[in-house]
Length: 342
Image 1 (tube, helix red, strand yellow):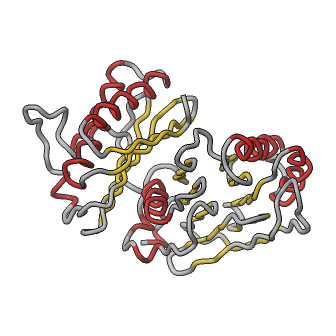
Image 2: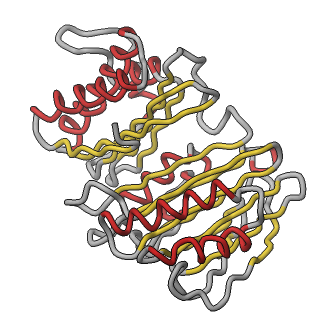
């Protein structure tokens, strides 16, 4: 089973297709019959809402793992009329005949974590996370010390994405990779996949050292654009090294810093591999994206979005700014909100 799947929902039969896909993914992850049923209800409600309220949209499924427990994330994207009052939409607390659940209320109750964002006239982005074992529902942007949101999808018509990402976490340190193999398809995926192998092997090194190792290891591939960010929470710094057109930004409550990469291609020509150190703000957020997204995005266009779950942020940026002619990845790493952000 692929780590990430996508499905367009534009007519009624695709609601059933979405339900079957979700059931298959959760069964493969070892969910029991009850939990498979919960996933099926959530996906059916999301798909039905896409048709009923937005005239269609897209579902993205991602398998996840934490502390040996598998889970599934479902992202729902549409460009419909949006929701004027989300709180009212969540108050539906009883089942109705002919419905598998109770709309957004059912999705919220059956999810381990749930968040939704909408601007009237600009559609809806909704996110549900469900683990194999039931866990208490966490309000948005609470929970662990950090959260991650990723959308990484191939260009339409390809099974494999030439983009790849990875994360390595130890106490007080988070290391993040984003790689974009040249072109798309199998050979691009081979290059970015090799970058992941080297990243895992040398994860105890700093970003510039890791990319130097990658440059040697990727010579037998077509090469890749690569960026690595290292967040050292105890020192409140971020170290960043990049070669090629991977974009990175640090976002705080009042500032945005663009991260510096050098021209070149890891494995082919990388004349300069240099690491830069930035201050990591309290409650900071890191956004990295491949050139499958255009560079014109601005979170200020989406009031309040920066406070929401990283999957909503990644989903909104992907929905609005993906290019149709390349693989697309957007990764959002977020330190849990503190009172300094309130």
